[in-house]
Length: 349
Ligand code: 5AD
Ligand code: FES
Image 1 (tube, helix red, strand yellow):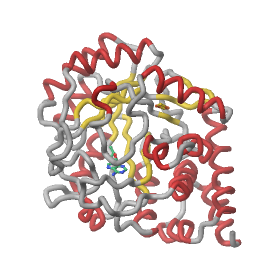
Image 2 (cartoon, rainbow, N blue to C red):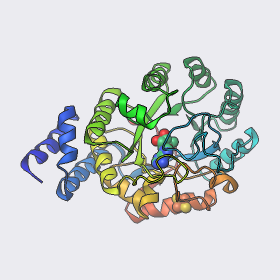
Image 3 (tube, protein in one colour):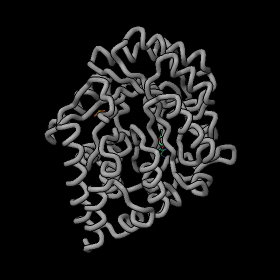
């Protein structure tokens, strides 16, 4: 590590801010020593806020039907090789009931942009979930919707919304998405969600096609300005039935490096060690926590549909029951000296 890199890391840890050029420099000039110093600083600030707690959220993948055609995504509309499914409201609620019995107090309902989930349908599910489990937080991850729709869902009881920005560079965004989608609308959605009062999560893939240190620096600058409550990052992993099927995956090393940087940019941020990170390395999630992450999201989807929710190849946890997934992660966190906490896990601001 050169003196300049050390100076950037120490300044980031102190001031939680660097310029776009400095972020690019920090990424380009990285080495093992820089990564070690960053993760040490990141873990220290996270420990000061959250101690040894790792929050957990139960993920329910409610539909793999999607009207969009994102070039990187395995459940894109053009993929005719997957079996499509949609959980019924009763199935979704019973996954949540099972999760509640296992101790989960946050549920993430995630799905493709499936038009069956009108405001009326989704509001009904959210309000019934909140009626049954008033002590739980409900997070939605259902893509781009109108401001009115986000407002109705919020009024029905949804607390949080995850919508990765995917890239903070408009030209890069256009290369990852079909013509009908726009960076402007993505930003409109994120701003609406924040204004309405949701706790909002953004995020991006590490190593997505065409991404360089410049795009990543813009992502970091965006996170600094937007100050999300949550930030989901994980490696890009190719899916064989997409236009990016022959690209290479993002690396463990760069993902961990960015997790540490994001922790230092916004110390209280809720930062998951994602399933994609666990997919590219057997101890990916543990390493993510040791780099500064503080959330894990075990899968509560019915085992029968899990393989069909394949955004990328070789996804882990597709054969395990909810209880197995929970206990597996609890053991994994204990193995590195952390404690899995099942409460709502709100951000400590
Ligand atoms: N590899 C890794 N992550 C992916 N996602 C979609 N496709 C892939 C892929 N091939 C991520 C996107 C999306 C989130 C739900 O999953 O960032 O926002
Ligand atoms: Fe799902 Fe380990 S976390 S099986």
